[in-house]
Length: 118
Length: 150
Image 1 (cartoon, each protein chain N blue to C red):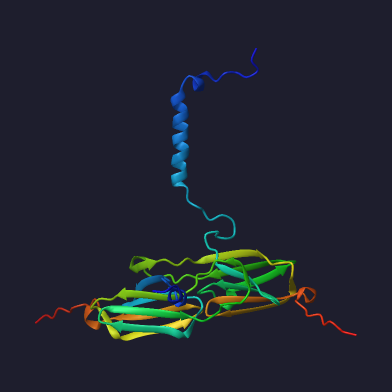
Image 2 (image 1 turned 180 degrees about the horizontal axis):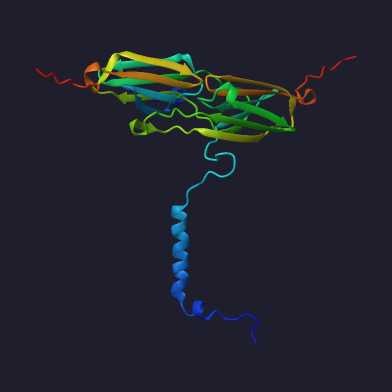
C-alpha cells in the first residue's frame, strides 16, 4: 500500500457501548459522537451484527491548539446468537448515541408452564 | 549537646524504614481516584481547539448529553462548559452485560486565545458534538491593505 493510500484510508474507532437486558430485550447504547442518522449502517449477516458509523466531515482549516478528539469512523461487530430475533432490530439515533433494541425470540423467553389437573 | 533528641528506636531499627516504604508503596496500589467536590474529574469530554483566520472553533464530543443539560458560560477569555450525562441505567443490575460508557456531571474550563472576542459566541449541539464558534476581534483579523500608487 502506498503512502498516499494509507493517508486516504479512514481510521476506524471502536465505539464505547453500554449493553443490558430489559423485559426480554437487549438494549445497546453505542456512543458515536459526530455521526448523523444518515451516517449509520447496520448489517446483520448470519451471526454477525455489524454497526458502522460514518462521521460527518467536521475538519476545520486552521491551526490546532488542542486536539483530543479521535479522528475516524466508528465500527463495531457483535456476534449475536440464535436467541435474537433478526427481523425485529430497531435503532434510534439521538444526541450522538445509537440506541438499539434487539428482541429475544419468543421461544427462548422464560415462560410458565401451567400444570393441568385432570 | 545535641538539640535534637535521638529517636533511638528508629535509628536502631533500619528494617522499620523498609516497612514504612513498603506501606507507602502498597498505598499507591490501593489508590483510587475518588469523586471529590461537585464534579467527577474522571469525566472530561475531549475537545479540539482550532484557530482559523477569522474565528476560534471549539469542537467537543459529548454523546448522550441533552441540550438542556448543558451550560456554557464565559468570563473574560475563560470559557466554562458544564454538563451532565445521564446514564442508561438498567432496571435490573444483574442483567448488565457491558459498561464502557461513563456518566455523570462534568466541567471543563478552557482559555480561549486573546484574539477571540467573547461577545461573539455561537454554539451548536448536533449529533453529540458541541461546536462553539468565537469570532475574532476585528483588529486582529487579517486585512489587506491596498497600496495606492500616485
